[in-house]
Image 1: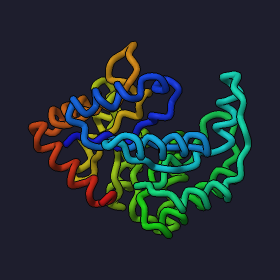
Image 2: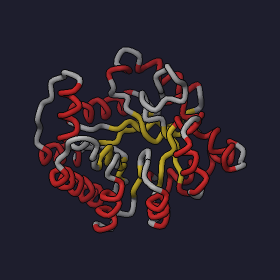
Image 3: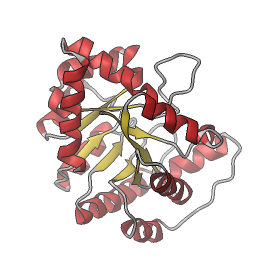
Image 4: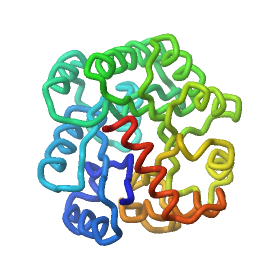
Length: 255
């Protein structure tokens, strides 16, 4: 009954341990794991894992290309340019549950115009296919919200939202979902989000292998239970109540 609404099983960290990671999640009663693609390579890996492992469902998307290129350069890795339009055509023909991970990222050098152009294309594809859109909005929270509102996007999941309280309120008023990552166990910002957002608009995620609840240990889908337990503590609920609410919330957007 636990759901990890956002992770990255395509990450190299999982490459030689993917079967064990999924098995540990199943043993922890995690019934659904949503793995997100961000470019042609990771989209195909995500799709493949969804076909290989029963609990895994895939989200296919395009992360801001300029951000991905800068990150690759920072890590000394090769970045291969690709056609956004061709990838959108490929995505639209696949079996997947949501468009993600997409959005805008204004951390460091960025091309805001190009990022918005790609994001608009992804939103319109999601609307055409009636799929939820999973939004990354680091340092671009206000811009992302304004664009989503302008395009009248309804099925929106704000992934790991770190914006100001007035923007959290704006998201809530739009009836969008917000994900609570496992690092909520030690993050006052996400604890504040949980306190201020109705349980009916919350989902839980790991963002694995990132945002671990255990310092010094890589995150994985089995650890999503930590987010449920912290929400229960902060809301004065029992974990079973949180599980039921999150399950219903997930069904509203993902069917």
